Length: 166
Ligand code: SF4
Image 1: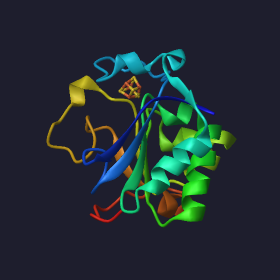
Image 2: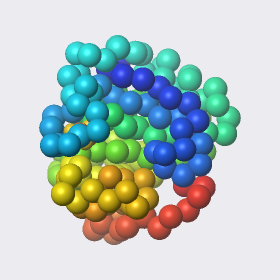
Image 3: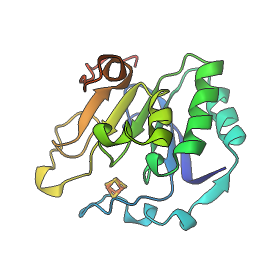
Image 4: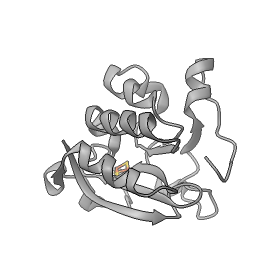
């Protein structure tokens, strides 16, 4: 079960191409200037079975997937179930937005388990002083676009190189 604010189909702003975006309820980061403070309270979301989310994602043959919020890394077990099922049943790529930093996520077993199914991570808290509207798929310049699988393999952060199909 996951607490979800919304599932939006065919978004084009949360990663390359058309994507199904799953917006998690709940975020502990409380970044000043957050674009979506209504998402902070996990109790304001709707409880949805992970199987239902997977079904909805797989019903769209072409769209890739983005986990956003709120913060999906605040509910890592449920998102891991969703990501694992998507990867087992499709070739879809998964992007994940989080206020946590990659270096901290890999130290937390539940969050590290979710990372193992993620293709691209957009990490770090939003910082209003570093806001830059020209940045690709992120709000402030401290946030990084990370190639997760390459980073896990090399045991250091590898920046994602833009690819319209990932
Ligand atoms: S991590 Fe994202 S949702 Fe959470 S407070 Fe920061 S900007 Fe808002």
